[in-house]
Length: 377
Image (cartoon, rainbow, N blue to C red; front, top):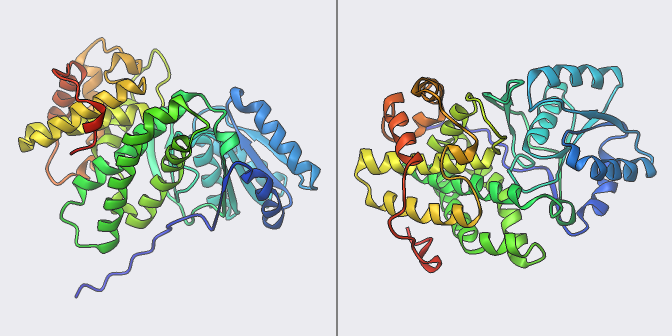
Protein backbone atom coordinates (compact mmCIF):
# COMPACT_ATOMS: atom_id res chain seq x y z
CA UNK A 1 0.00 0.00 0.00
CA UNK A 2 1.34 3.40 -0.98
CA UNK A 3 1.71 5.71 2.01
CA UNK A 4 1.37 9.18 0.53
CA UNK A 5 -0.12 12.19 2.25
CA UNK A 6 -1.99 14.88 0.36
CA UNK A 7 -2.72 18.37 1.64
CA UNK A 8 -5.83 19.76 -0.06
CA UNK A 9 -7.63 23.07 0.32
CA UNK A 10 -11.11 21.97 -0.63
CA UNK A 11 -13.35 24.95 0.03
CA UNK A 12 -13.70 28.37 1.62
CA UNK A 13 -14.15 28.29 5.38
CA UNK A 14 -17.68 29.66 4.97
CA UNK A 15 -19.93 30.23 1.95
CA UNK A 16 -23.06 32.36 1.92
CA UNK A 17 -25.23 32.09 -1.19
CA UNK A 18 -28.62 33.55 -1.98
CA UNK A 19 -30.55 36.65 -3.01
CA UNK A 20 -29.51 38.59 0.09
CA UNK A 21 -26.19 36.92 0.86
CA UNK A 22 -24.42 40.28 1.10
CA UNK A 23 -26.74 41.46 3.88
CA UNK A 24 -26.05 38.34 5.91
CA UNK A 25 -22.36 38.42 5.11
CA UNK A 26 -21.73 41.92 6.49
CA UNK A 27 -21.86 40.76 10.09
CA UNK A 28 -19.42 37.96 9.31
CA UNK A 29 -17.05 40.45 7.72
CA UNK A 30 -17.23 42.45 10.98
CA UNK A 31 -16.05 39.38 12.87
CA UNK A 32 -13.14 38.79 10.47
CA UNK A 33 -11.58 42.23 10.01
CA UNK A 34 -11.91 45.86 11.09
CA UNK A 35 -9.74 47.60 8.49
CA UNK A 36 -9.76 45.60 5.26
CA UNK A 37 -8.44 46.58 1.88
CA UNK A 38 -11.38 46.59 -0.56
CA UNK A 39 -10.08 45.62 -4.00
CA UNK A 40 -11.80 46.04 -7.36
CA UNK A 41 -11.06 47.06 -10.90
CA UNK A 42 -13.70 47.34 -13.62
CA UNK A 43 -15.24 50.75 -14.31
CA UNK A 44 -18.54 48.99 -15.01
CA UNK A 45 -18.74 47.75 -11.40
CA UNK A 46 -17.46 50.91 -9.69
CA UNK A 47 -20.90 52.14 -8.56
CA UNK A 48 -21.81 48.70 -7.25
CA UNK A 49 -18.55 48.41 -5.33
CA UNK A 50 -19.01 51.91 -3.90
CA UNK A 51 -22.38 50.78 -2.56
CA UNK A 52 -20.78 47.74 -0.91
CA UNK A 53 -18.05 49.88 0.60
CA UNK A 54 -20.63 52.31 2.03
CA UNK A 55 -22.54 49.39 3.53
CA UNK A 56 -19.40 48.34 5.40
CA UNK A 57 -18.53 51.88 6.48
CA UNK A 58 -22.06 52.23 7.89
CA UNK A 59 -21.46 49.30 10.25
CA UNK A 60 -18.15 50.66 11.48
CA UNK A 61 -15.67 48.95 9.18
CA UNK A 62 -12.78 51.17 8.09
CA UNK A 63 -12.26 50.62 4.35
CA UNK A 64 -8.99 51.10 2.47
CA UNK A 65 -9.91 51.44 -1.20
CA UNK A 66 -7.71 50.02 -3.98
CA UNK A 67 -8.12 49.19 -7.66
CA UNK A 68 -6.13 47.10 -10.08
CA UNK A 69 -4.75 48.94 -13.08
CA UNK A 70 -4.00 45.79 -15.05
CA UNK A 71 -4.90 42.12 -14.86
CA UNK A 72 -3.57 40.22 -11.84
CA UNK A 73 0.10 41.14 -12.35
CA UNK A 74 3.16 41.84 -10.22
CA UNK A 75 3.09 45.59 -10.92
CA UNK A 76 -0.30 45.92 -9.26
CA UNK A 77 0.37 43.31 -6.61
CA UNK A 78 3.57 44.97 -5.37
CA UNK A 79 1.88 48.38 -5.20
CA UNK A 80 -1.05 47.00 -3.22
CA UNK A 81 1.18 44.95 -0.91
CA UNK A 82 2.81 48.20 0.14
CA UNK A 83 -0.54 49.97 0.54
CA UNK A 84 -1.77 47.20 2.84
CA UNK A 85 1.35 47.46 4.97
CA UNK A 86 1.27 51.26 5.11
CA UNK A 87 -2.39 51.26 6.17
CA UNK A 88 -2.09 48.28 8.55
CA UNK A 89 -4.91 46.40 6.82
CA UNK A 90 -6.11 43.31 8.65
CA UNK A 91 -7.95 41.63 5.79
CA UNK A 92 -8.63 41.67 2.05
CA UNK A 93 -12.04 41.95 0.41
CA UNK A 94 -11.86 41.24 -3.33
CA UNK A 95 -14.97 42.14 -5.32
CA UNK A 96 -15.22 41.69 -9.07
CA UNK A 97 -14.30 39.16 -11.73
CA UNK A 98 -11.77 36.35 -11.72
CA UNK A 99 -8.60 38.40 -12.00
CA UNK A 100 -9.63 40.73 -9.16
CA UNK A 101 -10.51 37.73 -6.99
CA UNK A 102 -7.18 36.07 -7.83
CA UNK A 103 -5.28 39.26 -6.99
CA UNK A 104 -7.09 39.58 -3.68
CA UNK A 105 -6.32 35.99 -2.75
CA UNK A 106 -2.65 36.41 -3.68
CA UNK A 107 -2.27 39.57 -1.63
CA UNK A 108 -3.97 37.97 1.36
CA UNK A 109 -1.88 34.82 0.98
CA UNK A 110 1.44 36.65 0.81
CA UNK A 111 0.61 38.97 3.71
CA UNK A 112 -0.97 36.17 5.78
CA UNK A 113 -4.31 37.99 5.97
CA UNK A 114 -7.85 36.59 5.77
CA UNK A 115 -9.47 36.91 2.34
CA UNK A 116 -13.14 37.55 1.60
CA UNK A 117 -14.31 37.10 -1.99
CA UNK A 118 -17.44 38.77 -3.37
CA UNK A 119 -17.88 37.75 -7.03
CA UNK A 120 -19.70 40.25 -9.24
CA UNK A 121 -20.10 37.76 -12.07
CA UNK A 122 -20.23 33.99 -12.56
CA UNK A 123 -17.43 34.02 -15.12
CA UNK A 124 -15.01 31.82 -13.13
CA UNK A 125 -14.67 29.82 -9.90
CA UNK A 126 -11.89 32.12 -8.67
CA UNK A 127 -13.94 33.15 -5.64
CA UNK A 128 -13.71 29.58 -4.32
CA UNK A 129 -10.24 28.24 -5.00
CA UNK A 130 -6.79 28.26 -3.40
CA UNK A 131 -5.22 29.06 -6.74
CA UNK A 132 -4.38 32.27 -8.60
CA UNK A 133 -3.19 33.06 -12.11
CA UNK A 134 -0.56 35.74 -12.64
CA UNK A 135 -0.42 37.75 -15.87
CA UNK A 136 1.79 40.37 -17.49
CA UNK A 137 0.74 44.02 -17.82
CA UNK A 138 -0.48 43.18 -21.33
CA UNK A 139 -2.61 40.30 -20.07
CA UNK A 140 -0.32 37.44 -21.10
CA UNK A 141 -0.47 34.42 -18.78
CA UNK A 142 2.76 33.92 -16.82
CA UNK A 143 2.05 31.22 -14.23
CA UNK A 144 -0.42 29.92 -11.70
CA UNK A 145 0.30 29.89 -7.99
CA UNK A 146 -1.08 27.51 -5.39
CA UNK A 147 -2.15 29.35 -2.25
CA UNK A 148 -2.04 28.27 1.37
CA UNK A 149 -5.80 28.49 1.86
CA UNK A 150 -9.11 28.98 0.15
CA UNK A 151 -10.85 32.25 1.05
CA UNK A 152 -12.00 32.73 4.63
CA UNK A 153 -15.44 33.75 3.38
CA UNK A 154 -17.18 33.62 0.00
CA UNK A 155 -20.29 35.75 -0.44
CA UNK A 156 -22.23 34.74 -3.55
CA UNK A 157 -25.12 37.16 -3.77
CA UNK A 158 -27.45 36.42 -6.68
CA UNK A 159 -28.63 40.01 -6.91
CA UNK A 160 -25.04 41.23 -7.35
CA UNK A 161 -23.94 38.53 -9.79
CA UNK A 162 -27.10 38.95 -11.87
CA UNK A 163 -26.10 42.51 -12.76
CA UNK A 164 -23.19 41.24 -14.88
CA UNK A 165 -23.60 41.10 -18.67
CA UNK A 166 -24.70 37.78 -20.17
CA UNK A 167 -21.36 37.47 -21.91
CA UNK A 168 -19.69 36.87 -18.54
CA UNK A 169 -22.05 34.06 -17.58
CA UNK A 170 -21.64 32.46 -21.01
CA UNK A 171 -17.87 32.64 -20.56
CA UNK A 172 -18.25 31.05 -17.13
CA UNK A 173 -20.20 28.18 -18.66
CA UNK A 174 -17.37 27.47 -21.10
CA UNK A 175 -14.77 27.60 -18.32
CA UNK A 176 -16.79 25.27 -16.08
CA UNK A 177 -17.44 22.80 -18.91
CA UNK A 178 -13.68 22.33 -19.16
CA UNK A 179 -13.75 20.58 -15.77
CA UNK A 180 -15.29 17.53 -17.42
CA UNK A 181 -13.45 17.57 -20.72
CA UNK A 182 -10.05 18.01 -19.07
CA UNK A 183 -10.40 15.97 -15.88
CA UNK A 184 -12.11 12.97 -17.49
CA UNK A 185 -9.25 12.59 -19.96
CA UNK A 186 -6.28 13.38 -17.73
CA UNK A 187 -7.56 11.13 -14.91
CA UNK A 188 -9.07 8.24 -16.87
CA UNK A 189 -6.72 5.75 -15.18
CA UNK A 190 -6.68 7.24 -11.68
CA UNK A 191 -7.10 4.93 -8.67
CA UNK A 192 -7.60 7.86 -6.29
CA UNK A 193 -11.16 7.71 -4.95
CA UNK A 194 -11.49 11.46 -4.47
CA UNK A 195 -10.24 12.10 -7.99
CA UNK A 196 -12.70 9.55 -9.39
CA UNK A 197 -15.54 11.17 -7.47
CA UNK A 198 -14.49 14.66 -8.56
CA UNK A 199 -14.53 13.54 -12.20
CA UNK A 200 -18.06 12.22 -11.75
CA UNK A 201 -19.06 15.53 -10.19
CA UNK A 202 -17.61 17.21 -13.28
CA UNK A 203 -19.82 15.05 -15.48
CA UNK A 204 -22.93 16.06 -13.53
CA UNK A 205 -21.78 19.67 -13.74
CA UNK A 206 -21.40 19.38 -17.50
CA UNK A 207 -24.87 17.89 -17.91
CA UNK A 208 -26.38 20.62 -15.73
CA UNK A 209 -24.79 23.31 -17.87
CA UNK A 210 -25.80 21.67 -21.14
CA UNK A 211 -29.38 21.35 -19.93
CA UNK A 212 -29.78 24.76 -18.30
CA UNK A 213 -27.14 26.99 -19.91
CA UNK A 214 -29.19 28.46 -22.75
CA UNK A 215 -32.29 29.01 -20.62
CA UNK A 216 -30.23 30.64 -17.87
CA UNK A 217 -29.07 33.35 -20.25
CA UNK A 218 -32.60 33.93 -21.48
CA UNK A 219 -34.19 34.01 -18.01
CA UNK A 220 -31.92 35.54 -15.34
CA UNK A 221 -34.58 35.24 -12.63
CA UNK A 222 -35.19 31.54 -13.24
CA UNK A 223 -34.08 28.52 -11.25
CA UNK A 224 -31.97 27.61 -14.29
CA UNK A 225 -29.98 30.80 -13.83
CA UNK A 226 -29.28 29.98 -10.17
CA UNK A 227 -28.16 26.45 -11.01
CA UNK A 228 -25.89 27.64 -13.81
CA UNK A 229 -24.40 30.60 -11.92
CA UNK A 230 -23.63 28.42 -8.89
CA UNK A 231 -22.27 25.66 -11.11
CA UNK A 232 -19.79 28.08 -12.68
CA UNK A 233 -18.73 29.89 -9.51
CA UNK A 234 -19.12 27.29 -6.77
CA UNK A 235 -19.34 23.71 -8.03
CA UNK A 236 -16.47 24.13 -10.48
CA UNK A 237 -14.28 25.28 -7.60
CA UNK A 238 -15.44 22.42 -5.39
CA UNK A 239 -14.46 19.90 -8.06
CA UNK A 240 -10.94 21.31 -8.15
CA UNK A 241 -10.82 21.22 -4.36
CA UNK A 242 -11.98 17.62 -4.01
CA UNK A 243 -9.91 16.32 -6.91
CA UNK A 244 -6.88 18.41 -6.03
CA UNK A 245 -4.14 19.37 -8.47
CA UNK A 246 -4.70 16.17 -10.46
CA UNK A 247 -8.25 17.20 -11.28
CA UNK A 248 -7.88 20.67 -12.64
CA UNK A 249 -6.62 21.54 -16.08
CA UNK A 250 -5.16 20.01 -19.24
CA UNK A 251 -5.04 21.07 -22.89
CA UNK A 252 -7.97 23.50 -22.88
CA UNK A 253 -6.35 25.75 -20.30
CA UNK A 254 -2.92 25.27 -21.87
CA UNK A 255 -4.37 26.62 -25.13
CA UNK A 256 -5.77 29.59 -23.19
CA UNK A 257 -2.36 30.25 -21.67
CA UNK A 258 -0.65 30.16 -25.04
CA UNK A 259 -3.18 32.32 -26.86
CA UNK A 260 -2.88 35.06 -24.24
CA UNK A 261 0.67 35.59 -25.53
CA UNK A 262 -0.78 36.94 -28.80
CA UNK A 263 -2.05 40.41 -29.64
CA UNK A 264 -5.82 40.78 -29.62
CA UNK A 265 -7.99 43.16 -31.63
CA UNK A 266 -10.56 42.89 -28.83
CA UNK A 267 -10.45 41.61 -25.27
CA UNK A 268 -11.28 37.91 -25.05
CA UNK A 269 -12.53 36.59 -21.71
CA UNK A 270 -10.85 33.73 -19.87
CA UNK A 271 -13.72 31.30 -20.46
CA UNK A 272 -14.00 32.25 -24.13
CA UNK A 273 -10.39 31.21 -24.69
CA UNK A 274 -10.88 28.06 -22.61
CA UNK A 275 -13.99 27.15 -24.60
CA UNK A 276 -11.99 27.30 -27.83
CA UNK A 277 -9.29 25.31 -26.04
CA UNK A 278 -11.79 22.51 -25.32
CA UNK A 279 -12.53 22.27 -29.04
CA UNK A 280 -8.80 22.05 -29.75
CA UNK A 281 -8.36 19.32 -27.12
CA UNK A 282 -11.21 17.31 -28.64
CA UNK A 283 -9.62 17.68 -32.08
CA UNK A 284 -6.33 16.34 -30.68
CA UNK A 285 -8.17 13.35 -29.16
CA UNK A 286 -9.89 12.71 -32.46
CA UNK A 287 -6.63 12.81 -34.45
CA UNK A 288 -4.19 11.07 -32.13
CA UNK A 289 -6.54 8.46 -30.69
CA UNK A 290 -8.97 8.07 -33.60
CA UNK A 291 -11.70 8.83 -31.05
CA UNK A 292 -15.02 9.27 -32.86
CA UNK A 293 -16.74 10.16 -29.59
CA UNK A 294 -14.44 13.17 -29.43
CA UNK A 295 -15.65 14.21 -32.89
CA UNK A 296 -19.27 13.89 -31.78
CA UNK A 297 -18.59 15.75 -28.54
CA UNK A 298 -16.83 18.53 -30.46
CA UNK A 299 -19.76 19.04 -32.83
CA UNK A 300 -22.22 19.04 -29.93
CA UNK A 301 -20.11 21.51 -27.97
CA UNK A 302 -19.84 23.87 -30.94
CA UNK A 303 -23.63 23.85 -31.11
CA UNK A 304 -23.86 24.98 -27.49
CA UNK A 305 -21.09 27.58 -27.80
CA UNK A 306 -22.85 29.15 -30.77
CA UNK A 307 -26.17 29.15 -28.92
CA UNK A 308 -24.46 31.02 -26.10
CA UNK A 309 -22.87 33.44 -28.59
CA UNK A 310 -19.39 32.25 -27.62
CA UNK A 311 -16.48 32.38 -30.08
CA UNK A 312 -15.52 29.18 -31.91
CA UNK A 313 -12.62 30.43 -34.04
CA UNK A 314 -9.59 32.70 -33.74
CA UNK A 315 -11.15 35.68 -35.50
CA UNK A 316 -14.17 35.73 -33.20
CA UNK A 317 -11.73 35.64 -30.26
CA UNK A 318 -10.12 38.81 -31.60
CA UNK A 319 -7.00 37.05 -32.91
CA UNK A 320 -5.90 37.95 -36.44
CA UNK A 321 -2.76 36.05 -37.32
CA UNK A 322 -0.48 37.73 -39.86
CA UNK A 323 2.04 34.89 -39.86
CA UNK A 324 2.10 31.31 -38.62
CA UNK A 325 5.16 32.28 -36.59
CA UNK A 326 2.88 34.07 -34.12
CA UNK A 327 0.81 30.96 -33.54
CA UNK A 328 3.97 28.86 -33.29
CA UNK A 329 5.18 31.04 -30.42
CA UNK A 330 1.84 30.58 -28.64
CA UNK A 331 2.10 26.81 -29.09
CA UNK A 332 5.65 26.77 -27.75
CA UNK A 333 4.34 28.49 -24.62
CA UNK A 334 1.42 26.04 -24.35
CA UNK A 335 3.84 23.11 -24.52
CA UNK A 336 6.40 24.33 -21.96
CA UNK A 337 7.76 21.66 -19.65
CA UNK A 338 5.48 22.75 -16.79
CA UNK A 339 2.40 23.15 -18.98
CA UNK A 340 -0.94 21.57 -18.08
CA UNK A 341 -1.04 20.05 -21.56
CA UNK A 342 1.28 17.35 -20.23
CA UNK A 343 -1.51 16.16 -17.93
CA UNK A 344 -2.94 14.43 -21.00
CA UNK A 345 -2.33 10.66 -21.19
CA UNK A 346 -0.50 11.08 -24.50
CA UNK A 347 2.26 13.31 -25.82
CA UNK A 348 1.37 16.58 -27.54
CA UNK A 349 4.11 18.68 -29.11
CA UNK A 350 3.90 22.18 -30.54
CA UNK A 351 3.47 20.91 -34.12
CA UNK A 352 0.51 18.72 -33.16
CA UNK A 353 -1.05 21.54 -31.16
CA UNK A 354 -0.57 24.09 -33.91
CA UNK A 355 -2.17 21.80 -36.47
CA UNK A 356 -5.12 21.15 -34.14
CA UNK A 357 -5.65 24.88 -33.53
CA UNK A 358 -5.62 25.66 -37.27
CA UNK A 359 -7.97 22.78 -38.03
CA UNK A 360 -10.33 23.82 -35.23
CA UNK A 361 -10.23 27.38 -36.51
CA UNK A 362 -11.58 26.42 -39.92
CA UNK A 363 -13.94 23.64 -38.86
CA UNK A 364 -17.54 23.55 -40.07
CA UNK A 365 -20.18 21.33 -38.50
CA UNK A 366 -21.77 19.14 -41.14
CA UNK A 367 -24.88 18.51 -39.10
CA UNK A 368 -26.14 20.28 -36.00
CA UNK A 369 -27.43 17.85 -33.38
CA UNK A 370 -30.81 18.62 -31.78
CA UNK A 371 -30.67 20.06 -28.27
CA UNK A 372 -32.16 16.87 -26.86
CA UNK A 373 -28.97 14.93 -27.65
CA UNK A 374 -26.40 17.55 -26.81
CA UNK A 375 -25.02 15.73 -23.78
CA UNK A 376 -25.09 12.11 -24.86
CA UNK A 377 -21.33 11.57 -24.96
